[in-house]
Length: 111
Length: 185
Picture (tube, rainbow over the protein chains, first blue to last red):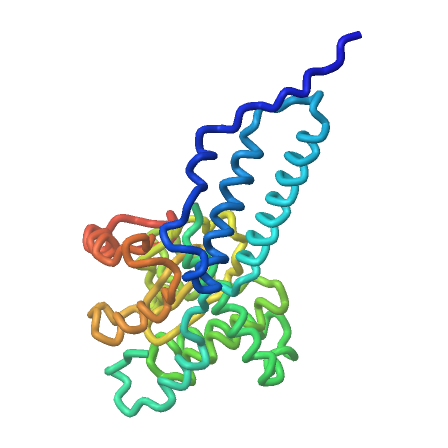
């Protein structure tokens, strides 16, 4: 019975674009290094997920699955945090009452 | 799509009105249903007579809070100007009423908002009808009205997206087009 082929699939063309940063690593601040690494990680993850689906290459499939699930769970957390943010409330009823109680000229009427 | 004013701003106003009323000890809790309805009519009529009197519009909101807490509908039809021929018992058309000038804001049928009157200066709201009203006899739109109207809308929507278009509303009012079938715009 023939063994499944484990030939390495070709990486997408975008792989070549992850090369040299515009600024030398040694001259970068911590924030710039983080940003650079984040870009590399995003590129790498994109390439990993764009590799052709191969159900016989279990090792690759495992990496792709892990990356996909991690991204999905992070996205859910981000969305949940966004939903938790309080809505901008309008001006309050209490302020409206206070404005009118304090007003000496009601016809001005600009709360 | 629901009106942001009805979906967000009105519930926000109702929450605060109810919270303030509760904090004041819920003074109308002991009224019977009939007495509460009579008190509602008296309070709204007093408000119509002097809409910028803070004690009067606050009293309207206190009554609204009591109806919300009881999950009852206020007899709004007794304080709103009805179309000719639509008079009902107890409406007493000779008395000054609230006049609808904007109604059927999007979503009013779906949001299950209470049938109460909220009043802030010369702007009143009946959430269940998706309607904004003014006391009768105050036809002139003054500077105070603009401020109160902006306050009422709050940050419901950016200017460009507001469902309430003042110019369109005025044109509609001048044209005398009816809104809710039983109410006179």
